[in-house]
Each structure stands twice: as structure tokens, then as C-alpha cells.
Length: 107
Image 1 (cartoon, one colour):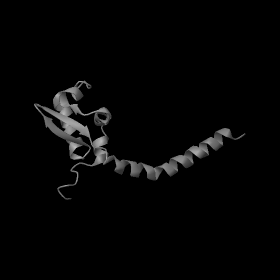
Image 2: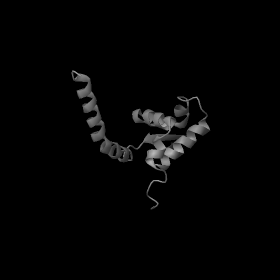
Image 3: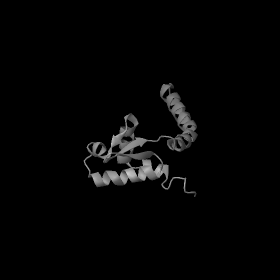
Image 4: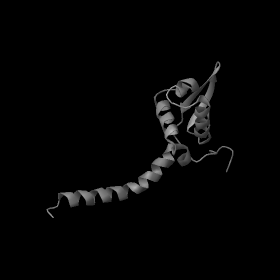
């Protein structure tokens, strides 16, 4: 693994519901840690740990603005998730078509 590659797996990073909610928040705007923490019933330290995992997976970037650290969504690594899920869409489509046929049949 080269130094430029993510240190955490994107799948592992988005497996946690709190991290998924953080990504949703950051999809709307750049946010400071304090603002992100206000959206959760957990400590700022816990939010920092979640942001670290997201950052190591390449999903967020941090920058210092005065005394604040602001985070921005970096969605490109999510393409890996999209490609993996797309592979299984064929199976879902087939199952849904079979279910539709079963429900609509006169049996």
C-alpha cells in the first residue's frame, strides 16, 4: 500500500451509522467540528475519532481556519461502494421482477 492510498477501508468507514450521518451533513456544507458535534448526542472526542476514520479513508478533508478545523466531504472514494453495489443490482432487479410476476399472476 503506497502512502497516497487510504489507510482505512471505505466500506469499514461507512459501516458506522454515525459516520454515515456525518457524511450526509458534510454533503450540504463545510463544517467545523463543533458544528458537527452539535448534531449528535456523543462527545466531541467521539466525533473527532469518527472524523479521523473518515479522513483516513479519504472521504473527508480537514483544513485549519483560524482556531477551527473545518471538514469537507471528498466523495470520490464512494465510487468504490457504488461499483460494488452496482454488481448486485442485476440480482435485485431479477428478484423484484420475479416478485412482481408472482404477485400479479392469477395463481
